Length: 130
Length: 172
Image (tube, rainbow over all chains, first blue to last red; front, side, top):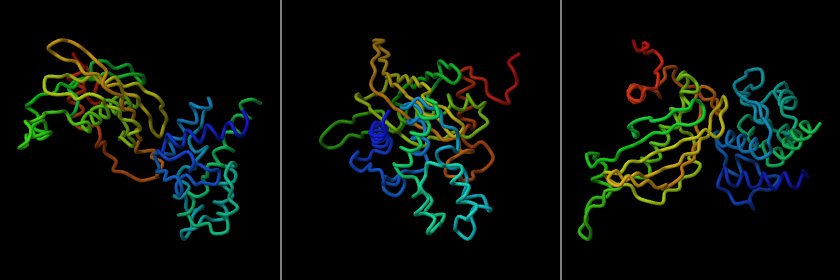
């Protein structure tokens, strides 16, 4: 499956899951800020990706669990260097370059873009095939 | 409660529940009351049909988790109702588990209307829902420890339906 095929399917999934227009689902769009995802939508997205691509996604594999509650990872409302390193290790599909410039925990939702989902699925399918 | 009885339960897979609609239900007199231009039109509100399907789905998921966790309706994914139901009708909700995980579940529900006086059954809609397991919710919010979801009303319904309720002694 090509990157374009994956993107097209994800577009459809996000439009269905959140009732947004497919034209709003661009690679740079953030799930929370631009597409209006709420916490339950993240679980809905996980379920739909599993069905559409025939993959199994473990809890915390696509989106982090309770990262913000860990005092080692969040201090004074900012994600610490250890926190950033932990995200990079656990979630290699997200691009943290912009977030690292101003790592406020309230902005963590912005790291989950449509592109991050495409990369995640690409990695999963590659692992499955390999 | 917005269902009267669970009539079938296959663990983790499927649950069928029924709801009899009666004119004794107060909301039927308000929905819709007579106006100067037309007589009363008693119709089961669609929102209460969604609630009945949600209670049915909640029991299916709660049962899969031995009723130890708090299951709440988190998202109404799809509601499609194409026919009114009124007093004397029976609604049958068939819920199938679509996806199930530690953080929640999604279900698909078919709504059928049974005309008690003819026995005629027809499908009148589909209601797909998502439920969150509050203990593992993705927002990381803490909730009270007691199980405020599966309270006495749910337990009474389950006992009447022959569903084993945790904490009850085994029948002698």
